[in-house]
Amino acid sequence: MRPLRPTSFEFSIPAMRGHTLRGLRYMDVTAPSDGSSRWLLLHGWLDNAASFERLVPQLFSTHLANDVTAVDMSGHGKSDHRSGPYHSTDYVAEVALLADHLYGPGVPFSLCGHSLGGGIALAAAGVLAPRISRLVLLESVGLLSGDASSAPRQLAKSMSKLPSGQTSVFASLEAAAARRAQKNVVPDPLFTIDSARVLASRGLRPVDGGVTWSTDPWLLLPTRMYMPEDVQRALASRVTAPTLIILTRDGIFQNLMRIPLLRRFGLDTLAMLLVARSLKHAARCCTILTAWWLSVNAQSKRFQRSCAILAEISHRLRSIRDCDVRVIARGGHHPHLTEASAVVAEITPWMKKVAKRSPVEADPESRRSMM
Image (tube, rainbow, N blue to C red; front, top):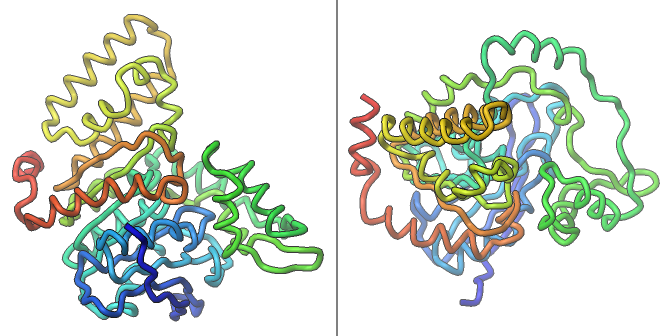
């Protein structure tokens, strides 16, 4: 099906602390919109609104959306800088502010977030639960968490850092894109100069001698304090919208796949464990797999650490009332840029499935298990 070309325009709205948020809005003005066809897209760390450039036309062509907004989050793309420390809770507040300005107070909408944007979307869906119709996370299972014991050290580390004031200058957009492709946040062979060029088209500003990335230097500094895991689970438990998580075999979990056990059983098995609705069943499976591997290599600290990470993620995702996990064969960490068709191919049947029921009807077994 040939992608539709929706009407698109730049927008800007006043945000917190007197700065301005900017982004792109795409609309099919001939079609009425509701909460499931009205989407707010949140990009990843150091990306910008253009990262959804290849996904948006397919959302329209498959009739999954008729009103899509891709925002440059504070400090990214064309939005203003905060020129100070950033915290995830401020981004969550920006989601609420954006929704009120774009759609009106109380109007329902759907959220889709990639990486950091996925973590923000999950937290926002917990805070704004009555307004969120659908939730899609791309290469994300929520925000990075930290335990209480590490908080003093993390805060001290971050307080000792300030932006250097130095920025890399590139002769051209092409040169900047080539460097980004070589040094992506998550090493990814599928994130080529072609993909990087999309981000560079919106993420650069002119300076003497060429161009530089418009990213706020404060974003490159250590986070002052991570959101505790129990807080993240509490937020996840408030999410009432049907939730879809899309991972790739060569994406953010690729390092875990290098462990022989996980490589043997595959990411599909991992996905099932992550959302296993029976905590006892999931724990039993993990115990058996762990015992088997440790009997082969009892000194594998990397495997033990990976099991701890997986257990944490599994607890978090099981807090979501209605959560599906899908795994696509390839796409790297930016599947919406590199394999947009594959992403839409997962979203489409899921949207049809959840349209047949309301969030209240979703997964009664999981609700009982959380009581």
